[in-house]
Length: 333
Image 1 (cartoon, one colour):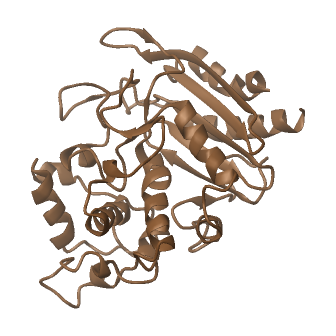
Image 2 (cartoon, helix red, strand yellow; image 1 turned 180 degrees about the vertical axis):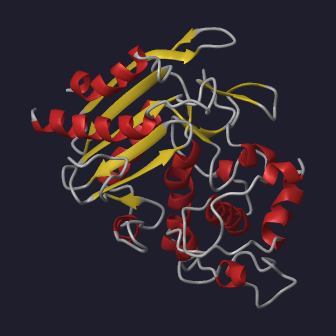
């Protein structure tokens, strides 16, 4: 099964579009298939990829960590998803009580239904994490015409979690094989960063996350294939309450649920999966998808930005091809 599902990734590696890839598939009944190929690093020293390597999960952090934390806090009655962020961050835009940002709710940010911009180079404003957090909270963000997927939404959610729990995000129990960096084992290399002047390996790729201290709501989580699969299997087998499951499966805005995407035409998970499939991708070349109808989840972990993001890795066709191949192989069992 796993060989057929891995065929698109193996072709991408052979064509030198990506250095390496790991694919893991898990079913609700506990069956698990994992394979890998290629290189964890090409430069400065070649390093073969193993199943023990940690990947920078990039924006997959948003669903495995931040969304789960927010929904757990809501489940415990510590926050209300439909309350404004100011219930946790009273100093948000504190110099303008009528500011747009002060009316945003947790659910708005989870579903990316705000008018906040997609991203901004926050790291260019300084290198003091506390000061940059203050900048995020006090900045008058330029409102865009209609909602887009926004890192700023999840930066705010991460700060809210820190305020409610009184601890950094890394203090949250994430489970074996998941950790904010630096990871406790061998890491795949990502980009030769122009800002930091080196190939990144075991340190977060996202510049804003790095400048903010490496633990933010939008990025910073590292994971092994086993850690990601353990999380996905937990979602399929009862780790989430009914309310949490409802939140991640129910559309909130267009194809977005609380944190996740649902299947839609042309999405990253392919078209062979059921309509009850959710997923999320990460800029470094990672992704996780969960098909509730089939009781099946798969993760494709690559280092497609190594040694540079400025290259057509083909990741946007590789992901759906892998999803379709995984479902086809599953149906053939």
